[in-house]
Length: 372
Ligand SMILES: *Cc1c(COP(=O)(O)O)cnc(C)c1O
Image 1 (tube, rainbow, N blue to C red):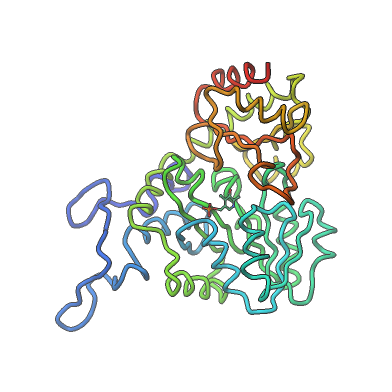
Image 2: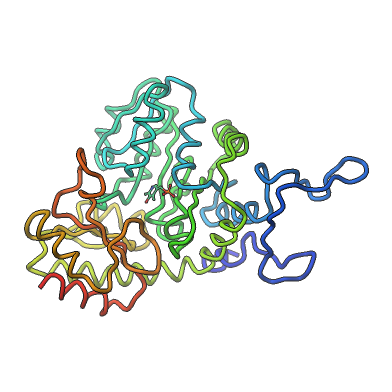
């Protein structure tokens, strides 16, 4: 099993030994019977600690990114929470100044009194280096980022962090294991919101961490996952596994459609700017093409005009759905400035789009009629 398409279908996924069922059953039992001698038949005790569906998902996730282990969480944010909770009080974290809103919120509003945080422009290595302190324990990278789809150099940042004794954690949600492999580029941990592309159908909430080493940080994260019970339900693990089976093929479609949409938008006079890593005009196109196998399914556009013109344009859309989130089969569009409110770094004329798996011509036709 060396190819991702094969790993996505088979890793952690064997016919059920009890019945021969090819599609695995969902194990809802929270507790497991002890043998007469007090031992457990399969080592399973209680489902906060372990569950067969979660174990399968974790095995599959580790294989997808070539990690030595993976942990599944109740959401992407719960995965982030576990990493931050694992740090000693007083530790310093460097995070991107355009980090996912929820990541910045955790650092500021939940860990603000116990951890130090610096928010910097991660696309500039010099800025990251200048922000390093003696107590820096984690450099948090998110690439491509939200909502300007900016790209930072994982290999360079991971080498720098490692030389100063800090771990690099990459939020790989937007790129997925198909397009970008942070652990192979030197990162310590890869993080995912499986709510997005891995689940792939906008019907589960979940998160994951994949580790390069079974070290002390990983042991603490594992302990927090079980002790805190921040775990996904067996059904959500099962749905995540179902989504992952088609992930490599879905990502091909997302990337192919996004390329067509990006080129269409770039040539449209109603559009001021398009942000997509696959375009030669992207600020870090070269870095993106070195560390990603394709441009991804996420792009953002800046409409000619202000917030009013931008919102009016989305109001005319008929196929593309106005909604938050990303990574599902349907195309979604969102005015991030309205969502984030005061303090948002998103330009007022910016729309973020998750390019779905509809026919590219239909997506483009909808954008064309809405732009006028
Ligand atoms: C959605 C998202 C998260 C948070 O994941 P949840 O599952 O919503 O908690 C984190 N990072 C990125 C890049 C995301 O898109």
